[in-house]
Amino acid sequence: MTVSQKIYEAVCAAILDGGQVNVNLNEASALTGSGSNIGGQILFDDSFDELRLANPFRIGARQVPCNNSDMMFVAKLGNSANATNPWGYTFTPNTGSPNTATSIWQLPVRTLVAQLPIRTAVYNDINNLPTTIIDDKVLEFSQLEGESMAINDDQAGSTTTSTGATSGLRGLDSYVTAGASAFGTSGSAITNGIHSIATVSFGGVTPTYNKIVDIANALPAQYWTLPGTAWHMRPQMIQTLRQLKDSQNLPLFLEIGEADGAAVGNVFGWPVIANSYLSAAFPIYLANWPRFLTIGDYPQMTVQVMDQTAPGFVTLFAEKRVVSSVRDPFSGVRASAA
Image (cartoon, rainbow, N blue to C red):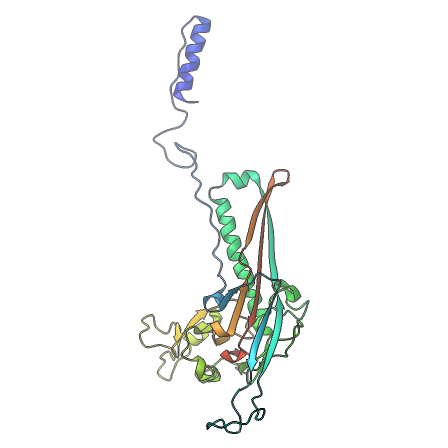
């Protein structure tokens, strides 16, 4: 009870009773003390969430709007010049071997959804909680799509259930391992467009310097100088490369100008992006990402709070639609642990 309330009640009692009333103005707590519940109140700091790794593939991948239910990719194949001898001014109509064609594949737009019931008392009382929940939900969706883009198998319903399986994206690991890249079969079925990606094998042992060189050599030279060419590596693989030493016990991947000492922030002139969503089976990708991977996004992400879906609760609903595909299989290579 405050001092003003004590005085007010004493005055009222004196008027009613007509007698003398003594007012005790001593504080209930020691103002000179310190500690829990002494001379103060509880201050609630703003709520926060554990930081998630936003989808690293979006750093360099080609991103386009997709307002439709499906996205079709069309690749032009072959040459237009005469394969026998294209030089000179003369030509013969309707003869030669231009071997020009197209390859197509079509993928459905996939949907990520989440719902979260929240007690209204908690939702209203904790500082910054609504903003924290929504910010974390956006990052959680980015995490989930990154995992699906890396390892999901859209051809099987049981092997990659947590990343979507047949309802998820076509993960990079699900593409065919090959000595040289090639387009997948042409058509609009879900089994079309599974390309072959040039793959260098580590043979089940710790990678050597020469194996990293082999990966770089597997990427065709026309992609070397393009903007967006970069490595994606698992953090564990980055640490492994940091530990590679020469005969003088010096780090092999210390780039000129790197003051932090073999940080593997740059290998052979291409930046290294740490990507926790890559699998142990394929821990390294080197690609010109604007040509290699395309991400199609529905322009809007739905976030809605629905009141009183159950007594004392509100429900947060979120939905995001996205599709992704390797577009140019020749513009990327990878490493296989096996």
